[in-house]
Length: 148
Image 1 (cartoon, rainbow, N blue to C red):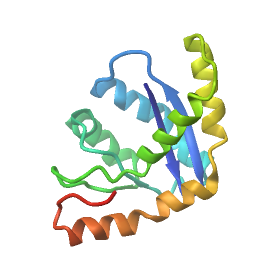
Image 2: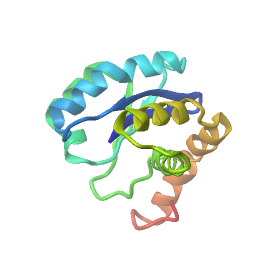
Image 3: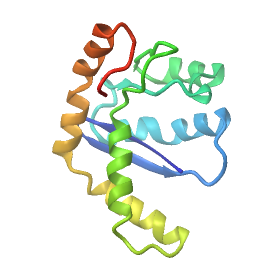
């Protein structure tokens, strides 16, 4: 499993996850990666953080940390569809990784990092740029399923 973040300006850090993630591990990943990723992408003062409704993401511990450490958090209604454009990036990364002959975990991690850093910025711009349309579609569908 991996954690990563994207923006209109590119990819942030990619963090390999070796164990079952809980809210404490998730918060530690955010502490080590979120601000640093925003700085690398040149968006440290202006980014909007978006995540799904996974219980560890919504835990009080994580929400309090985000309150003090993240400039803007997009709140997601409890039953909303997962609109996060990074889901498309995970699918593309999976497709790219499967083209390689990977024989062990170290090779997998190396290839993941390699492909992550080669992610097409125009593709990311298209995905992130689609967020207003995604949100408008949720409103239009009154929270029900969308094409996204």
